[in-house]
Image (cartoon, rainbow over all chains, first blue to last red; front, side, top):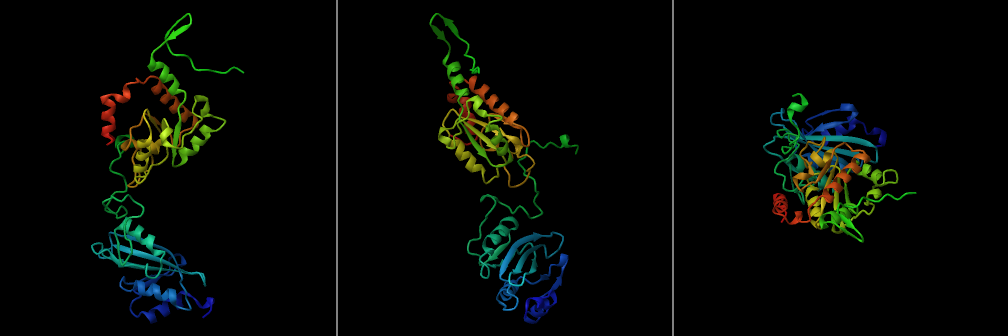
Length: 170
Length: 179
């Protein structure tokens, strides 16, 4: 398979053949192929994409969390961005799960680069990565007692004293 | 070119003698030889660089000798956003300074958190250390920073030599958890 053969269709086709029923849906916002996959299989899929001789998605660009409180039962998600440096093809994997069960297998077994990105995702969203070698906060203060990017928490700091609403016409 | 010197303190002058109080003489000496410690974390620090440069020249006030060690510094100049994670570092630097010490909070972020009303930013350095003078602005101009330093000079000139031993001062430090 040459570089020109790596189309979005071929990726979806081969993934569906390799992991039947595991590619829940796919779309292409802004031309970026995005696949929704179950969390139980996401690491297997990443590993296969990395090790496949034709695709060679050998670079993890990013890993992050998302929180959509209105998606009942699918509130939290982890997004993986992969890049085939060999063919210059990018790919996004999404996996969603309920907020009361924020557990995902770690991707550090496939990409060492996932280590700090998973710590950041844990720090901000409270998503626990099973099998992570050192899952603790990375950016926020160690004694913070909540995960600030979850949308039930206000963005503003509660200790602010100089913001009186009457000065801002509210 | 005329060299401008500071005015002498009030006192009694006679033939061959001049008498004044220690408070005034020492205050005068301290006020005109402040060693600042720049704690610059963001854009206010850039304004501070201009303040130290030839055009504005803080050396005119006896403060050309920056102390990058807190041990020898008199004035802690905090310039920029202090994240909550930086708070303990700032406090440590303050604790390492010897008495008498003063703190100048430069800019909106150091004084109140500024536009960063958010979970990760300390909402004013006076949450962790006592502050003597606040300079408003985002960022303040070098003139404003110089004005702040001159306000500090006024405080130093008029400070009682016993202030640092007073109960009020001890209570102030205790309120920040400093023994």
